[in-house]
Length: 72
Image (cartoon, rainbow, N blue to C red; front, side, top):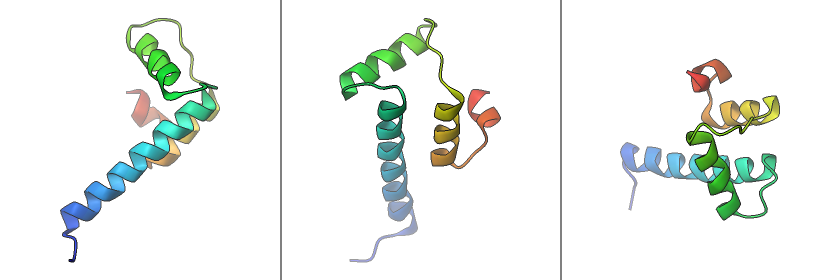
């Protein structure tokens, strides 16, 4: 069965999200996804979590946008 354009975009988005999560896990030196979740939660709560330039660069590459766009 042929996928519609919307279905193709959803598949691409799912792959992009998985790539982003795995790259975040790697760059934040998290041993597992639970630890990654804790880091993200701390960041959202305003705790002192600093993302490196390498991490911001990886995020922007995966999302195909500039670092400035992400930080806004």
